[in-house]
Image 1 (cartoon, rainbow, N blue to C red):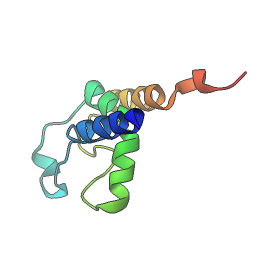
Image 2 (cartoon, one colour; image 1 turned 90 degrees about the vertical axis):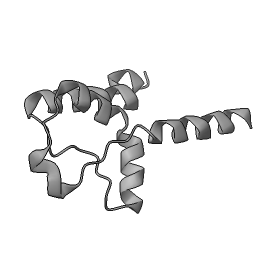
Image 3 (cartoon, rainbow, N blue to C red; image 1 turned 90 degrees about the horizontal axis):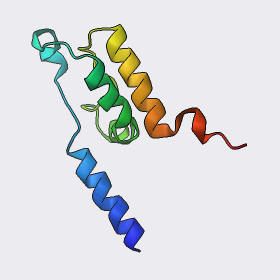
Length: 89
């Protein structure tokens, strides 16, 4: 029961870190790079679940600077989902 309560607390705590930008103002927002990509990759599972219930949530920042954001996003996704170390031997 304690583990469930801790997981729920962490889930609610991390959901406060979600970043949202309206599609209408994307052109006026400064682009984001590696560190934002890393963070967005790490919160991917939470963003994906949120995107199922709300059209205002996306899992990928459209206002990114290209390659460095993609690299950070891939690293963050691999880090949170276990990467290649999650494979059973």
